[in-house]
Length: 331
Picture 1 (cartoon, rainbow, N blue to C red):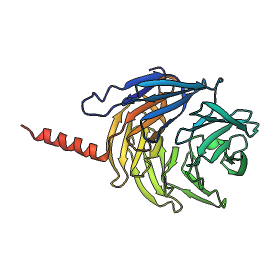
Picture 2 (cartoon, rainbow, N blue to C red):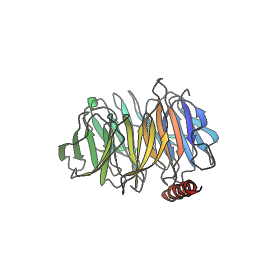
Picture 3 (cartoon, helix red, strand yellow):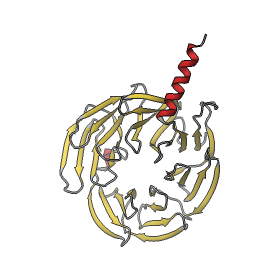
Picture 4 (cartoon, rainbow, N blue to C red):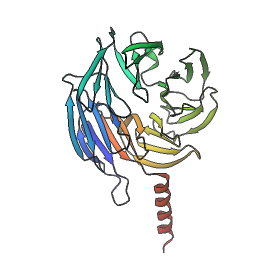
């Protein structure tokens, strides 16, 4: 399993314990198409590849950027690719036309693209040397504004930025959270009942945020008020990543032993995928919620890869549970 890219098909006619190996390699960033029928990735060697088909079994190399990369980010519709830098200008690429649109910015240190706006007109990048976010207008390639991103020693995963760029959340390892309104720079600080914080994420509407812990649990809070909504998790293995589905109805968590999908309304775990030994350092749903991906590696080796699973709908889960109950009642 040397940096493999995997997919799990959850249909009842397959053996769910056996992943489908799509390819191997070290992937830097991935994004599903809006219809969830393809996945596009860029790796550390600067190669842009797309997988499509019912089991993502069809592979096509789209193009190569011609250099090794440190940072890369696709827009949500996979039309654009932003490339970061360790000591130079950023680059914006047109994925469909497979060409460089423009180089912009001139940063002296590590600069990471972190979020496109939903209309692809703006991009936020993170200047890791000076601890600032910079918002760029991609029609004029002029900087709109910048605001604090927190100190680097807070950890690369212990922060989240809402999709509308308004809210920035940062957390210390011991559960001290800071919520910043990026429009006014007003900050709210609160110590929350979660420790060994590893990762955080906003819901799509930014009304809630979630955080996960190395102690094997996760929590959901109301944004702005810090009012707790739920605490969940088996407290058995560290949870490395957490994320919401696009409609906010599901929460997904990834530990070293399993990926779990939770019903936010009932706070009950709905399905569990055993993935023993795999560290899920970044996890998320497709836009339609029918699949999810994880970027991570096996904890016995310093290898990483992209892993894809098909995620059943609530209706499919209910149908499967009803079938299992009916089978158990048969003599």
